[in-house]
Length: 473
Ligand code: NAD
Image 1 (cartoon, rainbow, N blue to C red):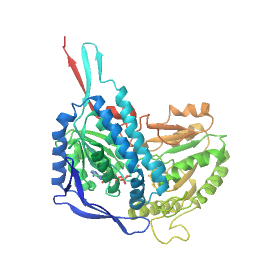
Image 2: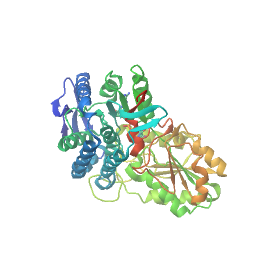
Image 3: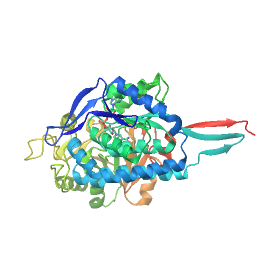
Image 4: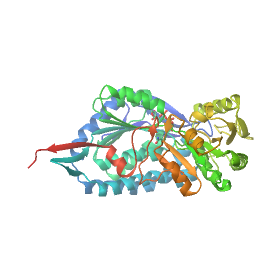
């Protein structure tokens, strides 16, 4: 059992004051794997006060000092990747191999890129008679999800440190171990006391307390659109900046004449990895009517070859989904897909054959899906793909954009043809024969997928204020 009963405040591990004990259930064994204290208002107040007090001196550190700090953090981070992989396997069912090869290293990329962006950042510019200066924003509250936990934590912590901000992190109550490891890394790297603070907790407790706190200058949130809306409302009374990285429903347009044998497996990678629990998972596969049957058969073959298995064992399998609630939500969506007229080509409801414990979902392919069906509109967050037919490019584009989300979109086919779509797709990340972000380029959503950008120099700028100085000699 992992035990993280203390909060990290002002450079020390301290007892929670009035917190509540909470257990995380291992989704493979359905047994408790981690115990934490869900923090209290008092814990939150202490952490915010520590961050506020530390801001005065940390915001004055030089760029060189902060680059050196990020480099030390990167060194400490590398040493802890196996620990992260182990705790993610227990808490969220992420296979150890993926933790070591993808989830862990993703966070390292953000730390290194933040240092690089800081080296090149233009802090000042002259605009007419004004001198325009970038400054750190102040105390940042960071509220993160469980699905790519190290990735999302570091995409906030690294640029905020680079900018000269101080912070309080509240990681997801589903994956508290990754947050605790980050605090240990900050401690080992010599981050000054109060600059980075960790309060474990849930959304309605610490999450809300941070959002409403008058001494928090910015909330940087990654999670569901539902929670993002609540956070924006709760933050409104104190007019703080709210940066939101929210849900998605990525369309994957496979252009007429594309090589189906290549395009379908490529697109499905993003639905399979992490058991489909990625905000940019391309779960809406749009295929020209002339190639529809071939694409469905190919997708069926690919998903039938996916093995599910114990996350602590090595191998190329996928693990369970994170918890009972997600499992039930996915089962409900699959059932709705069937009830609304979709055809299950493989997979469907229930656990995979031979599995009788754990929150394992059958890799599933749906055909005969129309864009108005619930399963084609709501985020699934499981290894489930819907294959949707289109007649021509215009219809493909219309279906792709017909969603309240706008996080990412993919187009597969000859680059020249695909290029005709990139300017018309209403999403923040477009993959051309490609899936997934790169740490240099900004990442964030259009529409109800969010309002900020993370990663690289755009990510760094989010954590800053801008000041105009006019009238200087
Ligand atoms: P969630 O919204 O349930 O929780 C995310 C975090 O917010 C958790 O730390 C939770 O405790 C906290 N929270 C929940 N309600 C809150 C409230 N009212 N006030 C303050 N904090 C609150 O999301 P999740 O289930 O952890 O993560 C999955 C979701 O995250 C999916 O919708 C996915 O698409 C999205 N996501 C988006 C991105 C992105 O970059 N756009 C990346 C990863 C995940």
